[in-house]
Amino acid sequence: MSHADFSSPREAARAFTPKLSAFVDDILYPRVWSDPSLSPRDRSLVTIAALVTGGHSDELPSHLHRALSNGVTREELSAAITHLAFYAGFPAAISASAAAEVTLGVLPQVESDTGNASANKED
Image 1 (cartoon, one colour):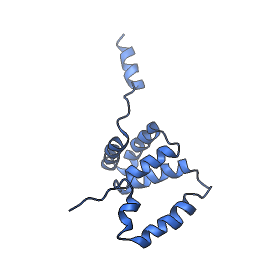
Image 2 (image 1 turned 90 degrees about the horizontal axis):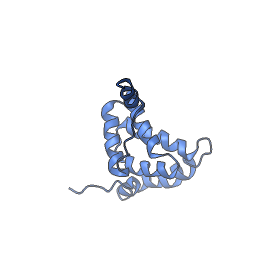
Image 3 (image 1 turned 120 degrees about the vertical axis):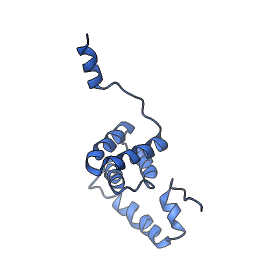
Image 4 (image 1 turned 180 degrees about the horizontal axis):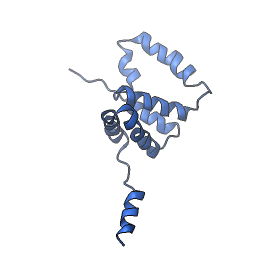
């Protein structure tokens, strides 16, 4: 069994569901994503949240890249996925985090305020 390339889910689905792909091409991107009521950046964050919450990890990589193109930072994506753990569930957030790591790479570790506070208490 071959696995679809989900770097572009729309292209992966095009052969089997050309009418569905036409809706995406003719309505979703030119009309919905272009609606000025939400910025592309905000739309990306909402989309990432919906994909994580729904467990739709196959479409996550392409939307993570789109989010970066729309001005969402890697740190903001990390924070959004962490935040979603409390609303969408830890398994969904952990799966999204793994998908983000494979797609975007590992974020550099930063020292947390908690770590600094406990180090100062030991002095």
